[in-house]
Length: 404
Ligand code: PMP
Ligand code: GLU
Figure 1 (cartoon, helix red, strand yellow):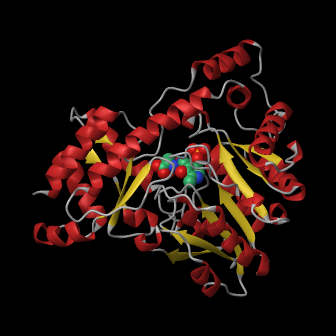
Figure 2 (cartoon, protein in one colour):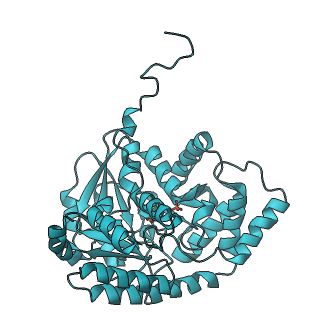
Figure 3 (cartoon, protein in one colour):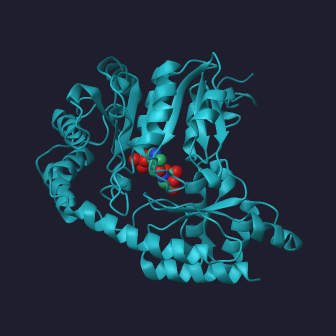
């Protein structure tokens, strides 16, 4: 071999990459933007990202942070003021006594989830994940060497995990339950009683619980989304809450999320992060601090707008022939059953939710995400984090596509 020349195999991928899928939501968004860049008027309802600008006072805090020279490394787990603000906000909203030492600030909630899986899971451990599930859960769990155990739920059960199904899936290898409420992709919100029934089994089986509560403030019709660790005494000792500013404050690009966990785990996650990524962006941390400590009316305003859009989307979709969807209590997604329209589309060569979404994009230029990406074939997800005119136009195009 000539020194310096790569062998054919020198860049062969690691085994862990063999089954790694790219994020289907981000992939669909990229496809929609490419089509839009070619001059087509695309209605992109694929990615779950608030369309509102980040509130001005938050942007101003970031500008001030830059001018004040807050542009250097910070402690890996986040600036003390932000950890304090996250703890204070969680304590105020849940009634639990959350301390800053329980908080680790990461590069978005996605990174926070990755940290938890890496810190807690060993090769072969099983994690119970109700399906439909958010696209990244399965892949992130697999990256840690553990196994996602995907439990199908049905629209008749509002896509909620039933205690009997949870209990039946337990094995000696079960280590963790992963819950997302309000749910991405279904928009359903568990009630306190429903969560308590699951909590009791998790306690009995001595499991860790990851509660993805990133949409907890985006709830409709006067609902409250209960925070999982509040539901039984001692539950906080086995629960990791994952949340962040991406959705609540329309700050997806700033990349700030966090975990709230018992202190020893927070310390381990902080150590992991100190080796993997160091601190999340210093300027973004100051912006997130302003988000949590500044006026909160922006959250209520955005939530009201999402509720109005929910009304429009739910009413229009449920009136379409063969389309069914559960009650959307929070977040900004409509997850609808297209099995009947799909059966009718067979004659046009459309047999899967992915093919249905492809055809919709090609023929009507509307981007949705196939249910198969969320572990629920026969369904599609629409994000309604978009302006009303765009939603109205998108819904009309979907109706036209269904009528073909
Ligand atoms: N969890 C859920 C349920 C989400 O919908 C998202 C949105 N991408 C995330 C986590 C990740 O959020 P972030 O953008 O802060 O990484
Ligand atoms: N959570 C959003 C979604 O589900 C953002 C995309 C992503 O991070 O995958 O569409």
